[in-house]
Image 1 (tube, rainbow, N blue to C red):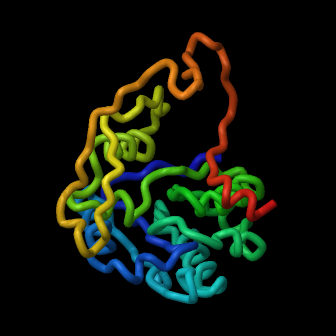
Image 2: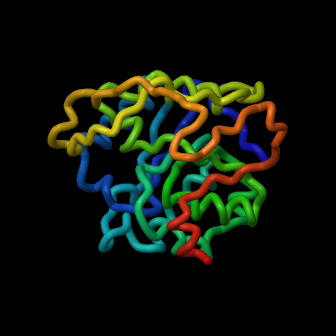
Length: 225
């Protein structure tokens, strides 16, 4: 089951099902919201998105409340997580899967959020999306990098198939401390793709292999099983 596509002017809900990082980086959070608004969306910061309960963004009940409110609100067309972290799997037993099944919408995140993706797909068949988080990507100094923005628009705002996913031509591993030193874009370098690297062979289209894929954070999946 695939959710409806996004359109300019749609509402996007921001949730924190795992880590409480959003509470500690208000400038980064504001920049992420501003990026989405510049892209033409209306942003709804859910009530507990900046809550703190130990190392999670609120209690289990508070995190569930935000997700259920976002799925139940017909005016909200997409849900984006602030970041990954720990313990989103705590929500699996009490998630309202019937509510989610009856109100399919785009749900985007990565890392620990894939625990929710696994449960939602298993219980409802809804396609979820491993993609940019508000703090890590949208909250960059000058917003999304061109590769990520183009991929976001192609994935969520068109009805045609996504098509072949090409690797980015740039990458970065520079660390800038959020809300302290992230007042510039991180330095990037050109990617160089090799057919052989560290003994691993890059698969090509000519290998003829195909099938369904499910992306997940294995640390998180291991916590579930």
